[in-house]
Structure formats: structure tokens, C-alpha cells
Length: 97
Image (tube, rainbow, N blue to C red):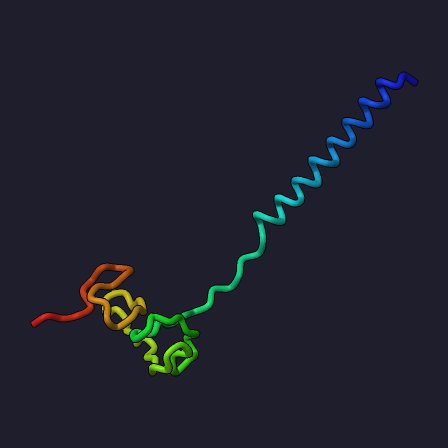
């Protein structure tokens, strides 16, 4: 067999293996599983981020008040009660008058 043919075949195989390995590494890097989103509540006194289950801020000790929710009268979508308009349908949540 000719040495150049053997060396070309070896180089092609080596290049293929290297490319395949790089593709696997990139796939692991860019397609990592999504991490679950933690619900947080921000302390109004110090701005510290706390778990939604906390009753008191672990940064400053201030009492935390979880947001109250209300439902839109038109579409039934649930959202924080301090909103003036529905996020889904746009109807006013506060009746003026």
C-alpha cells in the first residue's frame, strides 16, 4: 500500500473524530438542562431577595408581605391586586367613581 494513501486515511479519521468530540462538547455546553425558577420576594426595606416562603427578610429581619392576588372580572386571569389593568385582556381592574 502506498504510504500517502494510509496517511490520508488516518488524517481523515483523526479529523472526523476530533470534529465529533468538539460537537459533543459544544452540545453539552449550550444545551444544558434548564434550572427551575425560584420564586423570590424582594424586601421593601433593604431590597434583599428572599424565598417566597420566608416570613421575614433574612438580610435585615423586616417582615415580608407576599403579594395578594385578584382575578379579572372580564377574563378571570389572576394577577397581583395592585394592578390597575388586566395583563391578559386590558380591562380596568379598579372601578373609578
